[in-house]
Image: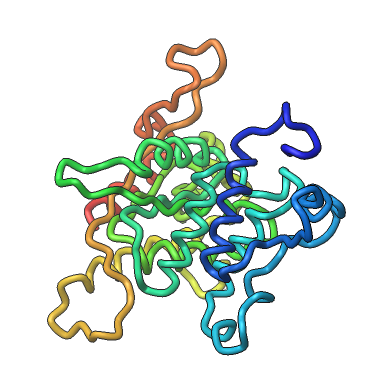
Length: 291
């Protein structure tokens, strides 16, 4: 940006500079080469469509085999010439670097924020912004894992929640009508009457679970059950050294429906317990809390 449009240089330029520093730390070389001071602009922005430099291309065979490929990709992303291809924020870059340490077993997350539907995503992001990098009274810096890609079509849900559950000490599970309703079947004796009273046959577009083998796989239920299983194993006397996961606590966060424009409290969320016609879903959530 400093060579092309200096007036538009901002924090993405600083992230690019940080990428240059990380590249030099890892390789002892600059990512770009110039024969003279006057040619640096050509070396850097001469071909804007070229791929960013890779740390791996500057390492010898021995170091290349040991260098973290994921970290190499993080550095390359920071060195993208087009701003839109770089990390959007310093926090996003920090998360990418920190995840490399987590994958190597050299760090962990304090909190994993779990959510299921799009209506819960804004609250999940709010919790992330409030908690991430905060400091506890005991002086512990909080690092939060938020799987922001889980609702993107085609993205693997299991990969995200596995990373969160196996590497976090605390799980914050957001529970709303959209997340709990599909977990409960209609009253078998009078389902027609329940539907007439306003119960949905397919809440949030999902089939209700019936508690039988024909049920579709439910990733959110799977996530909740694994979290509780890990919690149950935290102090197990027969716990093996190779066991992964060290969840110490699970805190369900019950949230109601989004308030509508003009309604008192907008844009906040209503009470989970205001949904009177769906009493069975409240019971499901309470059972989850008790577990």
